[in-house]
Amino acid sequence: MGMDLVPVYDDNSVDNEDGGVSINSQIRANLGVKTGAVTRGAVAVPVSTVGYVTDNEDQLTLVHSRISGWVEMLHVKSVGESVEKSEPLFEIYSPELVNAQQEFLLALRVSSGPVAEASGNKLRALGMTDAQIASLKKNGKALQRITMFAPSSGYVTSLNARAGMYIRPDTEIMAIGSRDSVWIIAEFFERQAGLVKAGQTVRFTTPALPNTEWQGTIDYVYPELDPRTRSLQARIRVPNTEGTLRPNMFVQLTMDAPIGENLLTVPRSALIQRTNSQHVLVAEGDGYFRPAPVRIGQEVGNRMVIIDGLNEGQRVVTSAQFLIDSETNLDEALLRFESGQTSASSGIENAAAAGLITGVGRISELDLGSESASITLNHGPITELSWPAMTMAFGLSESVSTDGLAIDQEVTFRFRETPEGYVIEGLTTTPKPQQNIGE
Image (cartoon, rainbow, N blue to C red):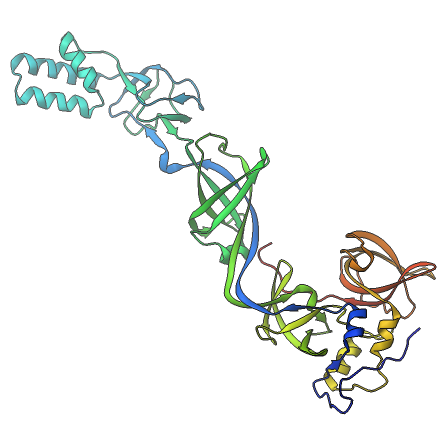
């Protein structure tokens, strides 16, 4: 049943043209009125995405032969083998190199001057080491097979040669990579592209090591989106001295992307939804509250960006902001506030006496077909009853309008305990913010 409500003014002669109301301290305490600050500052949205581990191409060494010939022996048998710098990789027979050695030996016999030195430099250019040239000079006999050595330490990432294969200088015999550092390639949705910039810090985990979190910095953002996935790739360089991150591992990444350095925000719970707009109740001090229309931006955690309608330093009501009886809906209350119709027939004192408890939740089930309609809500903690966040069913008072209610809709509800259980006496949809592009 409804009841007449009468607003309590500090001075009944005051004409509240802004539609505000004054509420004395006792009623504010009974209603559980709480306020939050309008703040200005830097705002960052959480961004989540996925990616994968790949080799650090800056530390990738490609192995080629400087001469044409046949691979006589391959010391590396498969991809993934570890190699150390100067370790033998393969042996090659090259008629060109054999002839160059014979020219060097002939130059040594004829003259040990500039001609011999030039012949020795030619052997170095063809891939022989100083130790091999010294051995050639000592033995006086051309080597038929020359061993090629690893230019760096690491592991074999590709192997394109086999024993007996004919190779040329343009043949990539193998590639050697280092795991001291790896790249993470992050895949961002197209709608997140504007939030991704070089220099941002990224945190990530991998299912292979769920209890470990790594951190890296975006050092390069690729200039084009992938035409197949419509995703933007970014590269993160990460130290990997222990070798725990391996190429092609799946990773989950998060980062805080700045969207503004000087933005106004209010607590998310302060917003009141009307048909085509959003409002807040501004606490002006001394128990005076007035409705204020606002334009909202992105939702950031438990706060909402305000584009227009408020100023820094103001306080807005975040709890019990409906200050109306169980039979009065939100639209009527705001219309009354905006039009200044603060008739003496309003009754805030009786609302306090009604003993309603306010909560916020999401609709998970609706049963409107039976005589005793009910609604199941996944609601947050209820401080007044020391309830934790949970899912439970409530009865619906006959006075509550169910038009427009839908599953997964966020609502603010006011309820009381009755002999039949907990019954909702007032229900208001929560405003839907602009899409959070960081999700």
